[in-house]
Image (tube, rainbow, N blue to C red; front, side, top):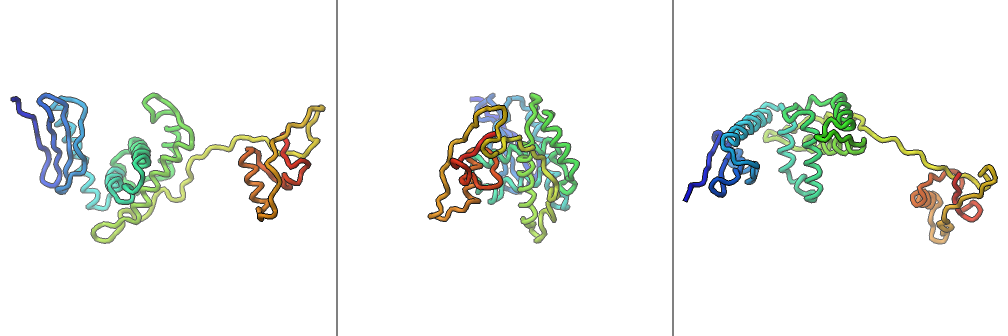
Length: 257
């Protein structure tokens, strides 16, 4: 019976294990750092042993750089992501939320650079990222995204950075002294124009008024404030309500212009 191929690369405290589960089958990889397996068995998607070893050496160089960055206080995005991904705070999230956050953070790191020093991230980086994402430059298919998607990516990044300011090293110092994104304005979309509410008789040209379905008068017995009712009306109708309360108008309804 043919032997299963297996090879261990790296040095003590930082190793990458390459192996087959079936003779000549796909190659799998697992990563060990400090005697702890930090990456479970995962197929690398091909059978080329030489390519697998080259990829493993690249990974080892990256792992070594991350360990050195932690020792010197020079924290990179990749180093921080690895720690955050394995933290109890992150693991406490639902599996779907974890997957979404990983996708967002990987998107940001692929643009800014995994070995980018976290402390050097500034407003210009946020602007460049927003412009690239919204123009489709970050998508393999060139698909642009809306500002809200960019903001969601950056919020995920900011949450990770806030976590790092509370997390401590072995000597008691924080991983990050401050969140470099703090105070930076995130991209936002303009609110679409919506029809405004007007009083009866404002329609010109003899056209008949178009009424919105009444939501009923305010129940004063139950103490429902008019301000709350105004908010409910606005939510249900999609029409911003201002001025006097709609229940005070004839018929208790809103009218489109």
